[in-house]
Length: 73
Image 1 (cartoon, rainbow, N blue to C red):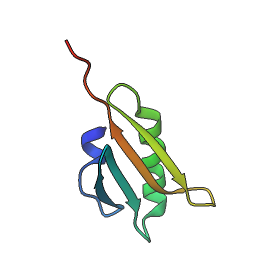
Image 2: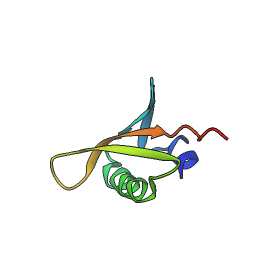
Image 3: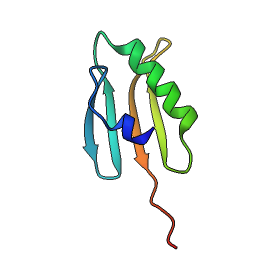
C-alpha cells in the first residue's frame, strides 16, 4: 500500500516533508482521493501511519503519510 500511495496519481499531488509525505487531493478528484485516504487509514500499521485532514463535508483534502522505520535486528 505504501508504494501505491507514493506513486504518481491524477487524484493527488505528493510533497516530500521531513518525516514523510503530504498527499493533497486535486480538485475534481476529491471523491477518489477520499476513498484512497480511507483505504490507507485501514491499511496503516507496521509499515506506515497516516494523519488525515477532513474537507469539512464528508471527504478528505489532505493526508500525511509517515513511513515507519524498520526495527533493528
